[in-house]
Image (tube, rainbow, N blue to C red; front, side):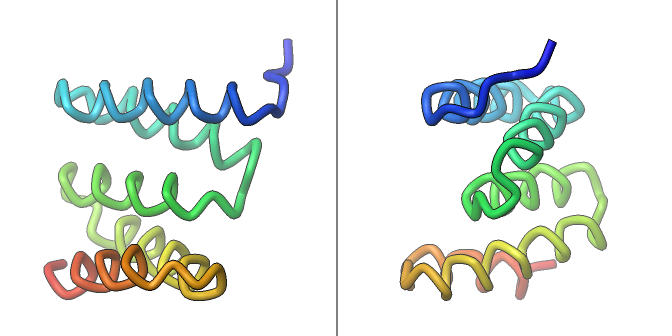
Length: 93
C-alpha cells in the first residue's frame, strides 16, 4: 500500500521522525526521514534533520551528503538562516 503524497502525510512523518530521534531511536528516525524523501526528494528540512541523525550514529559521510544537499536546497529557496545552520553543522563534522 503506497503512502499518499500530501503535506499532512509528510508533516506526520517529519513529526514521527523527530520524536524517534529525540528518543534516541535513530534507526526508526532515519526510516521516517527516508519515507519523507521518497515522497518529496527535495525536502531540505528532512535532509538536514536526517543528516543530524546520521551524525549521531557516526555516519559522517552520510551526514555530510545530507547536509550538502540540504544546504544547496535552502540556498536555492532563499532560506538563509537554515542554510547557515546546516553549514555550521558541516563545519562540526
